Image (cartoon, rainbow, N blue to C red; front, top):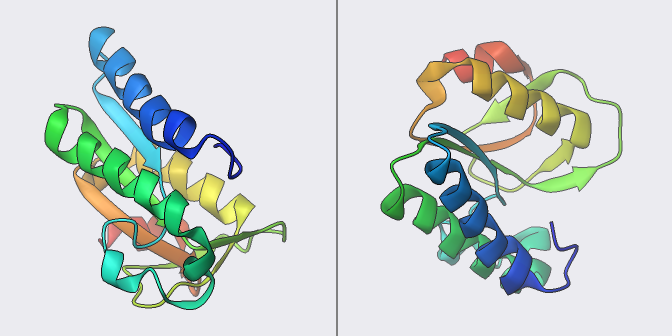
Length: 140
């Protein structure tokens, strides 16, 4: 990620370039790490998201590109605020409000979504929660 610098070059155009490269190499499976509610601009003024509007704009259009302009078997994982806490191995999915996410839980969710074919074509909003990651994804 851009860490707030060169948002358009990294978080939008860079993501699209990676999608194009995957398709050119006949790679079908694609996992996108996005931002919670990036596809729902009406929620961008909630909590900490107010300070991430430009980032969410970049992620919004990158996510739309993935969904509408590729033939990739995608999963879009949309965590909220990232924290450097130990992961619990438990998350909530399809959340209504942005929440905190241990980076370890996000990584484990990305890995698990690669293994679970039922996540293909899904946008998964998430936060730390009560359900083991594998169960949460299996029950989408």
